[in-house]
Image 1 (cartoon, rainbow, N blue to C red):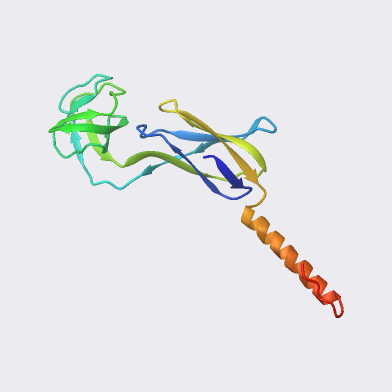
Image 2 (cartoon, one colour):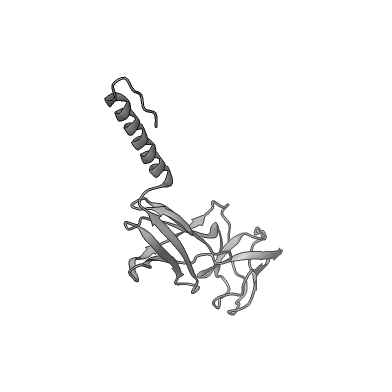
Length: 189
């Protein structure tokens, strides 16, 4: 997220939360000069890549914390993401219909629980617009896993390119004024 933002211009902020799929990040923007939040609860969206449809069901009950689940059908590969019950996991390894998840289950599951391939990427983004100039802190808080990412940004009145354009325009106008108002003389700046 760190960087230079431009006042009143929509800018994209991103957070990568590898292995935390399906998080629900919200952004709060804190003005450091006056010690107050200027915007709160801006929702971030997770990047989701297109994936080939696959669904199955678990074949056995499993308790919270277990990493291996058994499903009815083959067809998953390592590093794919699957939703099992209410949470999304990365497939660490596959042995036929036995699937090892990257983390233990976050909840108990029963036989016949849906297992669905999903494209969640663990990368979250939101477009924000700040209408003030100065230094700010941006906090991205997740309500599912308790993740918190804080970074700083500076918001400028205008971009460096716009500042240079304004300087060049001012120099050109001054040069034109000097060359047209002096009789017989040409002043180059």
